[in-house]
Length: 297
Length: 291
Image (tube, rainbow over all chains, first blue to last red; front, side):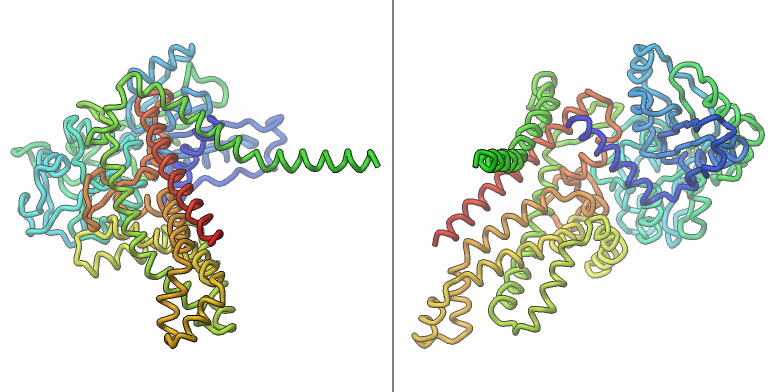
């Protein structure tokens, strides 16, 4: 009974992410099952930001390894880490580093977490295209998100209330943004929590006063629907537009590593998959999906 | 004959078993949810739940005050009920007393269809239609607020209210109406002063059941209310309901953590609220059946 309840929560989260995010992973064809001597299955679970990326990796990986089944699901980094601890996934995709308590739990089970940095992601701060504000400093963004600034006129825009949009607290992006941009302060209580990145894009494209944060890949994909702000690390530094080039060069200040975690040293197919992600071919997919490859720094 | 007796007995046992399963399940649900929630009463203490902030993820200090969630649920539910009652009751009166047979034939299946729409689908409808509409009509910066959520909930509750109130109105004895008409009251007077008051307890029960459903509803509200942890009674502010909190955060919490236990506490409060409402509804329904 209790287990069922727990699954309902996770199931809902997955349902939400599959509703909003169109994953590019399709069920693998069954005809390849012969040469592998029975189906081998690898599950990857976690960050919604990485669902696209992992789906693309899985597709390409399956083309090379017939008879391999890869299941990619989202739900948020926290969900993935929990699944890794509970042993219900082989690989956890995370857009934030594990907390100490989470690491300790895996160590306790005798499977210390192994971390692989597989890509870098810039976080774009997006507003409605009709908004006259183009540039914000990190401090201004922080003041907007913690509630000090309530009107766009506080940052040189029109006298309109700011509609603050955030991800749910289960999102790795939520935690990263809180840690690095809000400098560990709490979000203002009237921030609207959205279940998925695509919901933020939709809301920002509809409401003139809205501000939100999304992964660079999503901001690029959304095109003209939203406007990505130029960000200044501080008052005196230069305004930088989020792009692959500026994230690689380190000029764009809101960026983070995307990670894959395994419990214990990866073996067999899991290892092959992670090696594939880190290979030049895998990193090419990273660039195609709109993120920044690692090793190109 | 003993063979037949045995069969009778076996069937009886089966039926009793089937009937009592639900009791067992309800008890087990209370038991297991309680088991997960109880440690919270020991460690941070129940006082923590009375706080004004629900901040489950924080670098400063996490707090699990359910007040914003309770007021969020209250606000959305109250608004939805206020919208449901006039619509539901008027529709029920029309269908039961005024509509001709063929009108009823058309109206009833559509009302049942409305009741059958999955809440996620209604949520989509809410995002695409209701939210922009609310924003435009009230000139708000965003349509993601309590009002949008309660409109969707009202859409879900109205069919329940109509069906049950209609039954109640139709079961008012014909003699009441005849007596009223014989005394010279007009049809309208009879309807509002005799029939509806006579069916009132049934109508109240219908509303109670609908409110029970509204409180427990998750998906549709979660998609459109904006989910801000505000303590507010303004319909145009974004709110987060108890159900949405559980659904959105349960997937992420660390097993057995305080946050996890707090969510179970929210679950218990929700369970108690719907339980009490259902009991009241049953009481009123019983009263009206005896009348």
